[in-house]
Amino acid sequence: MPSTELLIAFFATTAIFAYIPGPAMLYAAAQTMARGRWSGLTAALGIHLGGYVHVFAAAAGLSVLFHAVPTLYLAVKLGGALYLIWLGVSMFRKRMDGDTALPVIERKSARRAFFESITVEVLNPKTAIFFMAFLPQFIDASAAFPVWLQFVVLGTIVNLMFSSADIVCVFLAGAMIARLRRSGRAQRLMQRAGGAVLVGLGVHVALQRS
Image (cartoon, rainbow, N blue to C red; front, side, top):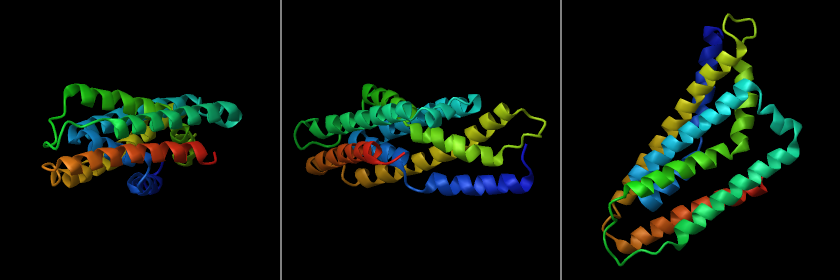
């Protein structure tokens, strides 16, 4: 494995990247605003599990394909962007029944957030590129452990740290909506805000350069 100095640099750099607001954090916050804290947490779990697809893809060298075949990269990026926009529009258009307190989040909603977040993360080629560009900086080809195992171990650490940031974001968003729980109007505004965030993320992903 890498030296102690390299590992310290790895943890410090990963923490900086993890806690800079990004699409995953905003997505988890949007789910929290639209469906409640429990759905936000299940969305964070889904993002975490989806991240392992990219970890193992990087370990197997599959993410190199995104560099070698730009058309495939563009197709996956646009697919993920359209999915985000569809989720956001769905949240924005969902009707609420009267000016009642925020309803208890049903298991179905949390389950939906979980599977939606896995799909969003798996369809995010930027994550694959990040792992492929970042992790090799801390891989020691001469170490006793094989390169693929180093990828898996370091990738898992990165994924856990990024998920910790998503969870913090969920609790911050949850604390904000808890104060608005008795207001039906505020509830609708927060739900629409969550949908607007997802639409904005989708548009950003679709328009950004690779």
